[in-house]
Image (cartoon, rainbow, N blue to C red; front, side, top):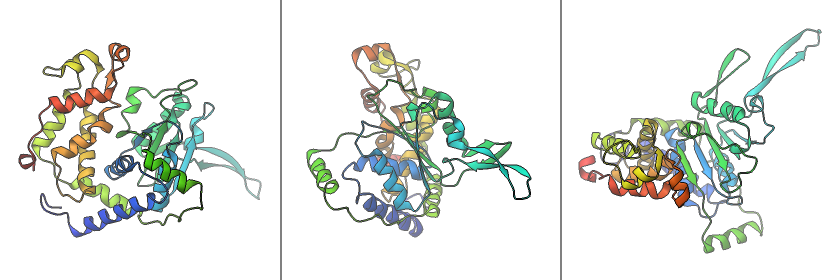
Length: 337
């Protein structure tokens, strides 16, 4: 890929495939365009995503539709309080052959898939959550003394219900940091809700046709990594992340007042990779400051820990991030290229 102009022909074809992918998802999912875009950004950036929203907003349907349109192996894990790590990674069973000999065989768990939906991840105990999060980080599972690679691409989408906390095990901040994006799924508009009622209470819609392959997903992930990013933009991302830390100098007043812990270096990595993915999916060959600003909310909202004063005053991470974007000056687009 070159540093300017259009992306090359192969990548153009891949981006066109992503547009067809969006269209296929749209056969089942009404609206939620920003959410679908952020899921696709996380996928091509090679990261995982956490979807947070109340029940009934099509989180599971979106993820299942994505898997169907990509012709990838899909597994759904419904997290429950009695789920144990081997329910996710797999377990050894003792088999007896026809000759009477016995041997252990490892039966792979549902994590051995390209797209894994961890439904209501906060309902399982920490030990089980950790088993999935380790697989997310390492792209492998160690069991029965062997390390087994997970299929590529490997993409975990976890869901959480933000309003029902009884009997749940909230993910610790260090575990949340494993997710590239924290994606918030909001209510549809009135027009979208009418369309949902029309589509879901009448005849079944057209089936989803697979239009995207594992090889294409991996090629896009490589293209994201190869995309250039100027030194000015790297500095901009670093300044944004450092401005989330109340112990730093020259931070917004809202950070000093309401933030207990700021984001770590992994947030900067996520900003750059997410911005590269946003630029690529828009058909551009270089990152702009607008791309970093576009992904700042899903990258930072789960990496900023508000303090007790913020909770008392009802201040969430979103207004803090908005203040950061206003406080930290972005380089001009021309200078950043």
